[in-house]
Image 1 (tube, rainbow, N blue to C red):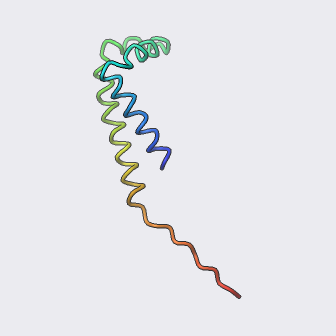
Image 2 (image 1 turned 135 degrees about the vertical axis):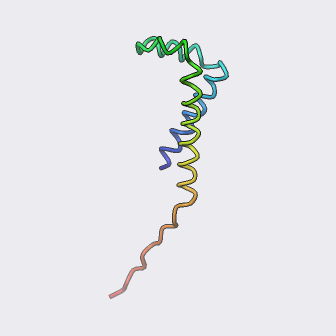
Length: 79
């Protein structure tokens, strides 16, 4: 679950930077190389739901890690 949290935080930061316009040229170039250049006209329609999804994923993973039951170590029995 720590990997999911890391992925969610990375995605949130990347999407937020793209929404601010800092990483937009990189994203446009990446989409063009991948053959998805038509999405660049509606970049906000893609980035804002992606940002919401990554934030939700991060919160879910954090909540899951925070509220999981504590592991109990079984006691050794001496025979």
